[in-house]
Length: 193
Image (cartoon, rainbow, N blue to C red; front, top):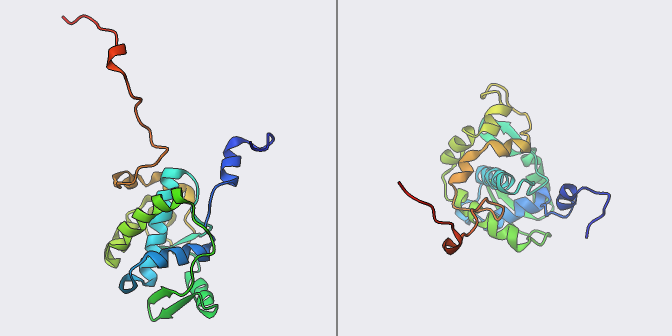
């Protein structure tokens, strides 16, 4: 039972899971193959995974903000975040490659892990050029950049609802609309002409 003074929608959001930015980075890095683990891949996988989660679950996956830059969406101030994480011994940065040295502190609920795991795998398999091209076609990126004329603005996570290409993914949301099961014996027969 929740607090009677808090609307149910807010109660659900209040009790929902969200990664800290650092834990989200560590989680994604722990799922990437070392030879594919670079800054660009990290940023694109983070963006696509979070925006798919937003699209299907209508709630954020992390506290990360995404900036729209010329290479597509990236975690806002990711360079500073990664440098800090490197100094704290959580990751190692080798040129453009990034590898985790620590695990996320957050315990990821099974329902979240089972939903985002296939998404991370799917986008991690794409090449960096493919990820950049795909990210440049997203409505959230195009709206934020005013069709790629203004760079550096923060992408509104509410724009994830416009990304209908996520419908093509094999991931099915538990909240997806499904037709009810019908017992054909209970149907009323009618006359044909």
